Image (cartoon, rainbow, N blue to C red; front, top):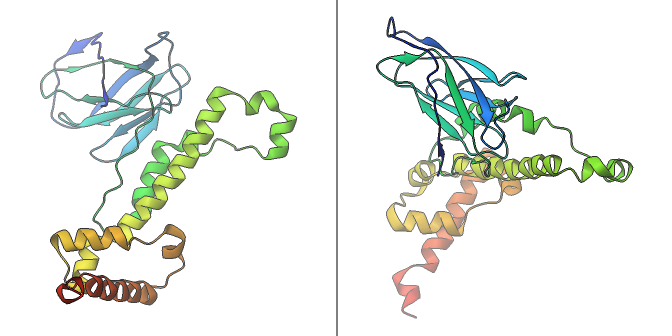
Length: 234
């Protein structure tokens, strides 16, 4: 479960209007109280985002009622809802240690949305994803860097993120709406078919649009044949 953000209203004044306001504050580590740099600060309503400065400060615009997320590798996500009434002039956000939380991969959308969605997540985790990896030779030459707990955590996250992106691509492309339109399957039959014949990422990437549609039609034919009442009674 996401951590409830602790908000300390240091200075509070009545909001003057309903338009987007500048939300200021700082993010600190719940363990030692030190400012945290490179924390992703995201307005989930419009996907705008920034990262905290070296001294943990942030500045982001938001309307009343909108949700702000604070994300950093190795910490639980903190979320702050901008109040509908008086908006504090300054927020203090405390992050607690915990595994990073990637969104669930269960999107019945279309493949054309995959690129923009991936770009958004890349911006959220830009600092971790662009962190340099090490070759085997680098690890031998720089063993202390290779054994660093923080570095190993970031490299593990990079691998998990790659897996997450591949699974998300499959969900965007091999989606329920498309399969139903092509085959007429629905309900439990659709769910079973998509579980049994879910293609692998590499397989899907190597398919043309024609071969992808052919794959669906051919596998649905086999699925129906295997699950026909006549076959099951033999």
